[in-house]
Image 1 (cartoon, rainbow, N blue to C red):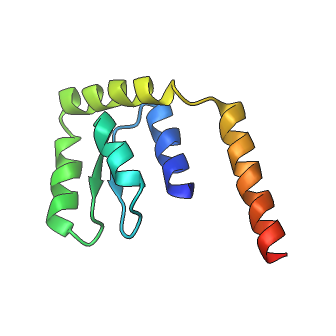
Image 2: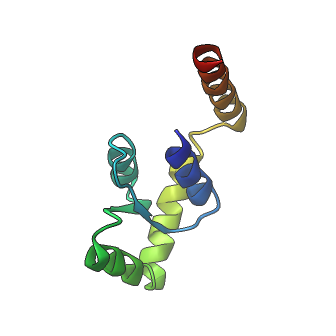
Length: 96
C-alpha cells in the first residue's frame, strides 16, 4: 500500500514518474495500465535511465501527467485515509 500511495500522490500532482518496483508484485500492473508512470526494475540501470530520459521530452511527460491526473481523480482522500487507518489498526491488533 505504501508504494502505491506514493505513486497516487505523484500522479495527483501531475508528476510524470519512473517508478522502481523491486519486489512489489501488485503495483506495477496498476501503474502500467494507466501509463502515467513507467514501472522499472530498480536494478536495471539502463532501463531506469531510458525511462527517465524519455520523461525529459515535454510531450511524453505532459501526456503521462495528464494520464496520471485522470487516474488520480478516481481516488478520494477520505477513502485513502480510511484504508490506511484500517491497515494500521489491523497491524496493531495483529502485532500488539
